[in-house]
Length: 187
Image (tube, rainbow, N blue to C red; front, side):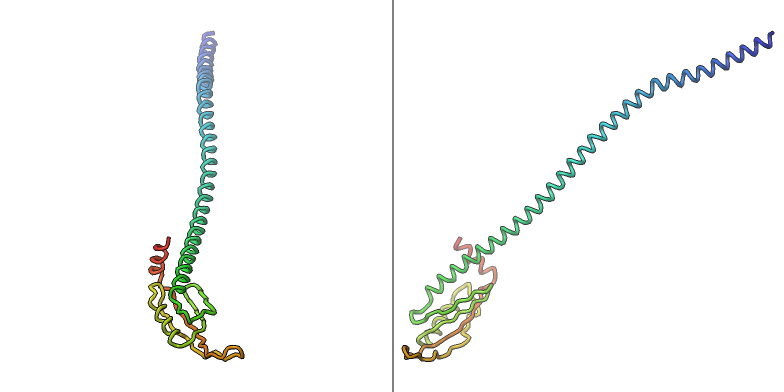
């Protein structure tokens, strides 16, 4: 019987040790699972917040890119408008100067401005008046390379028997530094 009791005692001891292991594992799970679940919930909440933040940040990035494109487009438009304004001021200044300088016996029949190139055609009573007009234009500070291209005699008509000279001239507006001085004065 002693052997049987010893076997029973050993069995009970081993059973208790095994049960203590299972109870310890069960207790550990009961303690750790809620803690780990809470940590997981916190991490999921942080992940959701970060995902939302990243989505908002991506939307802001798109808005900033759109703003930058609009800013670049508006700057180009502003530059274009400034260029047109400067050209208009220069054209008005040029026309006023022509009006001041043109001799009374010189008549313009064509005035063509293409970028910085100017082409002038007209009629005059004499070559002296064409030459005087050429000299006056050459003295204008925002013009350069003023030259007479041709002087021809206009064929007489039945109504006009006076000899009239046809002329063609060309000139250039000065470089952009000179042009900016002209437009600054007028603005």
